[in-house]
Picture 1 (cartoon, rainbow, N blue to C red):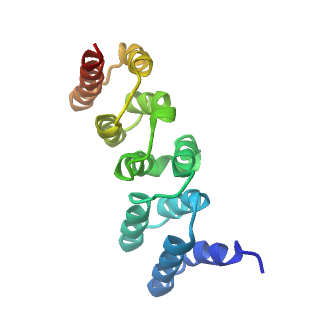
Picture 2: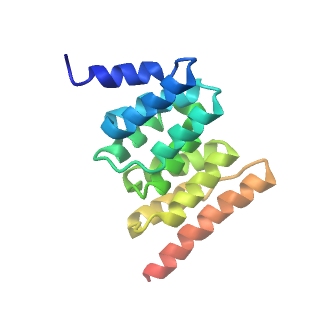
Length: 173
């Protein structure tokens, strides 16, 4: 039997109506999973209405410490079938203290075009990103220069993103 077979069974069990089997599957994924588990977990998260499963999946994602996790989360940002859970993807970066720098351009774009909650998550991620090179800060500020939102609250969030990036820039001087 292949090594992947138990993981395939675990992912299938996540969709099982039996909560005990689904929770057992989550335990298996937590023990044996690697970065390749992230996209399937996100797909289950996007497709389930079970709040217990949603909480457990988010808990796994918010504490992911496996090699390649940031790349998988970065890939998930542009997957149409995962758009409904994109705020969780963004939150997983900062909760797990993963380096989101390679995806910052895309994240800034999401802050401008996405939902209010996604903008909040991008702001939080930028606040928690330990280092952002000056060139990246300047590029992000240039992209955000014309950012506008119809909703005043969302505009205030975009202004906060801009303000935080400006503070970073001033701190580099």
